[in-house]
Length: 321
Ligand code: UFG
Picture (cartoon, rainbow, N blue to C red):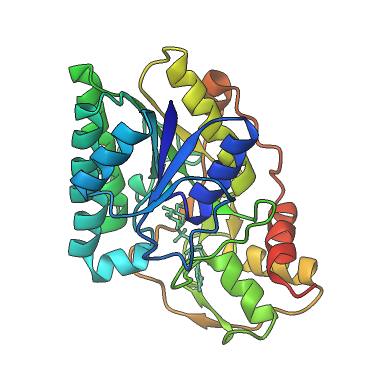
């Protein structure tokens, strides 16, 4: 039996592939490589370049590899881009996921771990945010994640799929042998590192008038290695007949954009050139997780909660030796 990893060539998906292989799991990866330069997979991992909405391709993979579970990472992830191109996000993240789940159920795959996001909450009423907080996404991206969670709730009621939706806060840092890379890069830590290295223009700080201690937006950065561990635990939960559930994945600690810039400067030993700019459309002011449920149900305790450690791993993976 194999685990189908959609988006397994991506940043978080790739780290999870490595982790599952270490645990002696059989995996098969599908990725369209639209936002990743290459598959970057370890030798011997079966890889198919295809869209998740390609029913024929996915059905063939499920059949040929005796797939019994799916970890669904594939999707577009840029909040700002989703505001500019909502149709693209609804098509890729929702329509194609609907096709994927239909093919999975037809093929008898009944366990799914889904990459959801803190973006489902929008502007939260309380910090840290518990999982039962209402969904009020402020971007099409967040909306796509909320819709797919609702679809999975209905699949659970039909008895066809049990699932775990993992609401990542800000995935960051680098897993061994892998750096964070997106095409185009829109994420704060890699952009700050590249600015410090002089590889890009100065970083633009998006918004300085938020209702936060220094006026810049606050996020909960969580190490990609800890995310990988959470996925393995989620899979284990489903295999042990655990119920369909959703979990926040964060450290419960918020850092502002300026604090991240300071951390990168500290770790890199050089200044991060930056300019102050307007808010980016769709960005909530503060997102910080309550991750108590993941700890209680999955036994998940992040091993790398410190921002400087997260930034150090990112720096080590990107800076010249
Ligand atoms: N930021 C800047 N300048 C930049 C890039 C980002 O100031 O050049 C700011 C953003 O405005 C935001 C913070 O840095 O306040 C983090 O931005 P990222 O783009 O790194 O991450 P986001 O918070 O926008 O989004 C990430 C994931 C989403 C997820 C979200 C949940 O990409 O998938 O975290 O917190 F939904």
